[in-house]
Figure 1 (cartoon, rainbow, N blue to C red):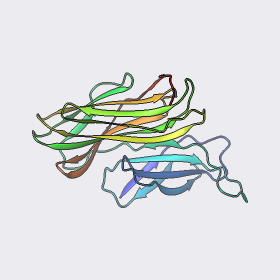
Figure 2: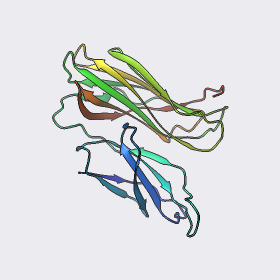
Figure 3: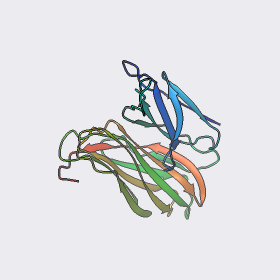
Figure 4: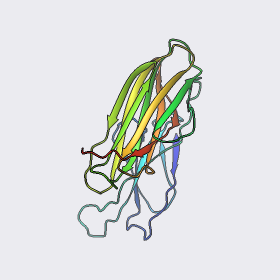
Length: 227
């Protein structure tokens, strides 16, 4: 059983029905599980289905629905993710090679064996809101000298409303030594970059599912142009 605690800063004034929490396994693409509403921080939920050390992505929304109102009045989705633990018994590790200084990240996979086939998934989640230029969008790119590159992009928005996003990209590397380097670029465009989060995880080793992850770097780029 995994117990996850979500700390958040409550709104003032408090929403009429508290804060709705939804979650899923990080990078799975599964539908979110609605854990219900919480009236104060922290919000805590348990998962009895996934193994110990599983990583999660969550979002909170204030529920401002008034009594007798038809439908729901919900605030903006605020995204986050859990701190992930290395799966027991797996020697491989992945870590960020150097401190963040912008959009790019370099990760290193260590303690591998030549010939290992390792699937790596980058997940970029957060909130974008156009503050300049003609549009806002989120983009993600992943590559390795030992595997093929991949990329993903969110929808493109020209309005000034906030929009949540969750995108992922994968590469499968075949180790030619006991280490391999993974390169990512996670960028929001014409938006705030502080409301986004990048995680890169080893999700499979030689066909065996695992979950070994590290947090990465992201930033904003004022690219101009159109969608």
